[in-house]
Amino acid sequence: MFLNEALKSILPEGKEFEILHLRSPSIECHPLIAKQTSSSDDSVTVKTQHLFVLFHNEKTIFGLEIYVYINLKAVNSSTQDGERVIFISKADTTGHADCKVNYRSVTKVLIEYILSLDPNSYLQKVIPKRFDYGKIDGTLITKKTSSIKALRILANRNLPSYSAEPKSQTQFYNSYRCRANLETKVCLFTRPAPQYLFPESSKNPNKRVIDGDRLLRWWLSILDDILLETFQEDTKARLRIPGENPTSIRRYLKDVKYGGWEVGDIFGTKHKDTAIYHIPLFPDDPKARFLRQLVEENRARKTILETFWIELQNRQEFKLSVTVSVIGIQGLTAVKSLQRPPPCDVILSSSRKEFNAIKRYVTGENYDTAAGAREAYLNVRDYLSVRRNQKMMTIVGQFTTGCKANDRDSSSQRTVITANTLQPRKKLKK
Ligand SMILES: CC(C)(COP(=O)(O)OP(=O)(O)OC[C@H]1O[C@@H](n2cnc3c(N)ncnc32)[C@H](O)[C@@H]1OP(=O)(O)O)[C@@H](O)C(=O)NCCC(=O)NCCS
Image (tube, helix red, strand yellow):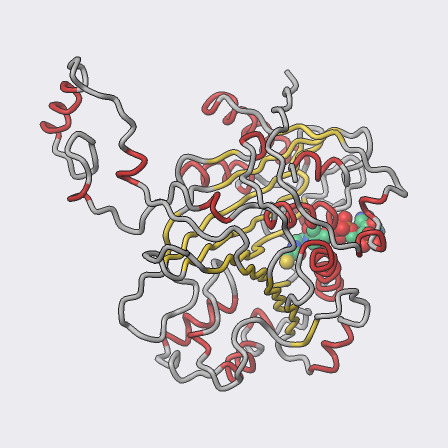
């Protein structure tokens, strides 16, 4: 599945768009879920961030932020098993599109694209939690190298005997391997907000902000299609609305097509289990904020899952009389061969600093008028051109009303994502 192929099938016919798909470097991080025992275990969690930004007529129109965690269970064993956790963090629009774009389809295609990626593509050049400077080759310059030694190393590099073998890859990064088709969890917290990624965009009268109820149905319809098209048949799909009883929650599941939807969540099965050992800590997530509060109040080890959900609903962010929900999917994808993202599909940032700098060009503007949406586009375009000699991918939409690509009924057929790396790089517009 190529990003441009997938997007052009759902973007309006004849209209030109550009997409920024920015990926952070992979870094080792703390486990998503606290460990029950303090004994050392050799599991590793690798975190990568994706940011998709869609532009039309040189203006920012849509953004989607996704985190992917690969949790490897036994790093030192030959068969590295584990799980892939996809946390859908933020989706937002600016209201500055000059044509009608179906953001539901855009969001669905982007999540399917992430699901089509081989988890091994995140595990090649992983920044370790801590560098062991003692083990790094003496001919490389690190933060710990003194100025005199660094000058000596640089001088030696001019000697004919110096071999410029690329040592840094193995010296500075870790790399792992895992099974391609890991069990996958998709986690999402639905809560409407005037804006998430685009400051002041809610002041744009053309932006459509949907309420909590519609937002929940919007996400359910996206994930329902993904379950039918991309996951195997025995996949778990769960919906929890803190503060709502199961009968009311079931009302939201009346129209779904996938048969496996149930009321609940994918974070532990027994009510009496301790919450902190089952609820993952995602960035900027209300569940994680509540868990941190429990730690501060010294109640983390005493709060069971049942109490956790009851108390969570009383927190301010859940009490604003808007529908908020927690959605989870857990299963194996129906993927024949997962793909490594072709280089033309992704801008791989060299560091977290660079990732955040490019992201700030998008999230640092004011979107109440089209000027901010345009400024963000120009800044991203110029940064990529000047600093990286790269361009965003151009997509010309092919979707016409009545096209099958957008038809929910036609999608109930389970499709198989196949990788194809032979696609030539698209010549970018001058
Ligand atoms: C969530 C959000 C991205 C959805 O955007 P959207 O424009 O409603 O999404 P879509 O393009 O998929 O449109 C949804 C439906 O409304 C219809 N629609 C779109 N624009 C419309 C308009 N101006 N008037 C009436 N209907 C419209 C679409 O045709 C579509 O109908 P369908 O579901 O039958 O196909 C948008 O409301 C938003 O940016 N919200 C603010 C941030 C937010 O709350 N994010 C959620 C994070 S969890």
